[in-house]
Length: 371
Image 1 (spheres, one colour):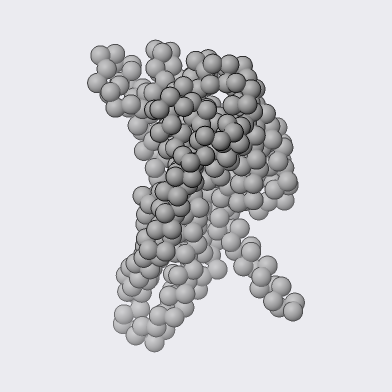
Image 2: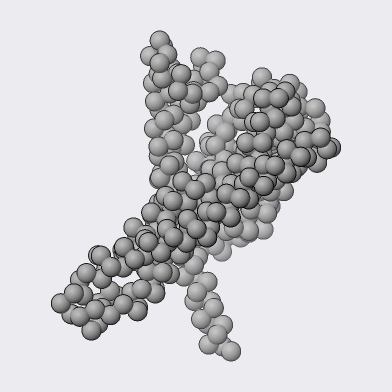
């Protein structure tokens, strides 16, 4: 019995170390992207522009507007590495260098399939343990031993991870996305506060993943029809998790590992400019925080809609707040939702969280393949 508990604890520590390693390597990409996008969007707001990402601004007669448009693109490019990097280094931490390519490619596929950070987390863990298994099972003659870690294992691991992601993970999530969109459209005639809470909770659930996208896409579709409440709910909910978690790391710094303290600074900025992905490192480090993300986002969204705020534009960043009808209520709703998440996060980050290792931790066997 004690041996079983020891093995279970060992696996748990390995998983935590792997996840924190992935988060620590992902952070520079998030911070670089957040700062560049922040510069672009704050700068563009001085010219009265609230959608600097729109391709039309790349052809503007104003040199600074074109520059800010490019900066926003640079930031978006940095953020596009986020999921491949976190998946790659989760895999790296579990099974060393041969797992890096399968993990990164699996994470990129997760991004392309729209499975969000949950898909990247699955891809990283799959790659790590598949490569670890292959390394233990593949036996090659001494003359061919070097081909294992640089050819057979990365290629086989990549193929297996991609097949699982494409045909077992991607398909169901795509169907889920379509089903959620249809469900929300069917709900559009129900109580607006209930609908706002549902949309808010969905947006806060996976921070850019399929559930989030289903809610935002539906809100956009209804916005085009002159139905504004779903959009109001979605735009409020987009920014509540990154602001709430970022503020928590500023107020209760010692409750969070060092890597998340740094992530909190970027998360706060990303929240204010309307990028929900700033909260992803916290959700990856401890998926239980998703619970408070959903509660805080749903509460803020329902409060904004219930008290009469109306956002008629697909803009969540601070530069669009004053254009909202009932903007004071809108901002208060964001503050309440963020406070719920900031306080709720203390249930899951207690100051005892594992610190991100300085270098990837590996429990994988050495790749000296025997005959």
